[in-house]
Length: 280
Image (cartoon, rainbow, N blue to C red; front, side):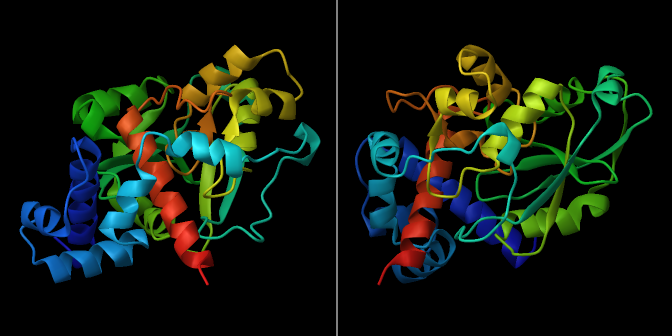
């Protein structure tokens, strides 16, 4: 196990321990569960998350999503303006993407080779899939198990050829989870309506949120809120296409294919890093 993999594993465990605790945990209690000294754990956690464990627990509070919706709501551009500039977006991955043509998508991935591999991430073991053009799938397995995660992604492109080859994906995965300015290419494989929704999600900056109705308006289908919600839920590229940043108008989290605990952890992690970067 590499040092980086070890850090990923420790942080994923720590975030889950914090998230499932009945009450805020002391630094000593958290460090003890990680089998680390308080000083070492605090230093490692603060380096990775951007804030102390005590502060992070405030971001993970159940009301955090409503606070984000009130204070950091993103108004999306119209469909014609969908796109990423990368400018002014703190701690965001720089992404490039290409969408599969509707005709090719209708073939269910026939003639397409998709490579797969398992990787460590801040949010637990992650199954990543990609073509020669970029990452096309990412699934967090802890909520459903490894075999189910594999089946979940493969079922989206039933006629594709799947080859286990982590080395093909490693350079892209490194930039994706390191919050690097190096480009992480995505290959969006979905129906035309889904692609529109996913492109809109790519406009939502780190540390901010939007709503399903805002996305529907942005893609020119203001009455299709339910269909937008379905398309958000079918997003195959977890984290990189940030469906975790889409909330209900009430501020409730709504659904999340990989589990609401994972969604809350992502929002808290991103907000903590953004606030740490902008603190005076």
